[in-house]
Amino acid sequence: MKHQLHKAFTLIELCVVLVIIAIAAAMVFPWSNRQDIPREQFRKSMQHLAAAGTNAKNLAVSTSKLHVLHVELDEGRFYIAVEDEDTPLEGTLSSLPDGSRFNRAELESEQASGVLKIRFAPDGWADNASITAIGPAGRSTPPQTITVAFTLNCGTLRLSDSASLR
Image 1: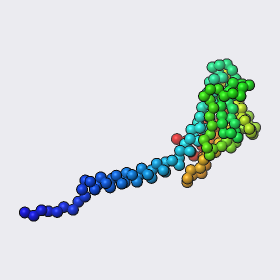
Image 2: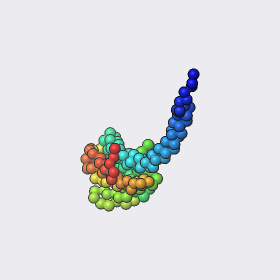
Image 3: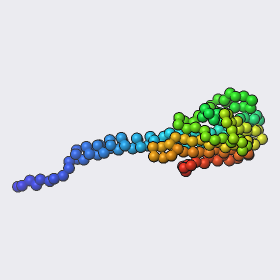
């Protein structure tokens, strides 16, 4: 009887090749996704700014006190305070991530600088304001620009982006 010799890969050899491919993929894909993290953090911080406006409006209505959303344009920070107080309410202090900055701010169609103070009244009205910020650039993408607009009745907060927001 003759033994036939089959030329094929063994199970061990196939497993070794799969492990090598998995290690290579783990090294490549997380690296490519890390470049999007600063952009995503910037996008989320601008969404947080829009939510802070809604929160300030709700606080003003529920407490029957005028609340102010302070936006420190040079520092890249924002917080909510009761009128005539510059102390942030607990849990409301936030800031833009590194590599991001406020670019333009308008209050009632006037260019603002320094600290922008958007008022929210107990009867539901708010100052008309818009704030534009520029986020970090990706490895192969331009810097992201997002504008948050607060309308007179504060019923809608518009969050627009130079790229589409998902």
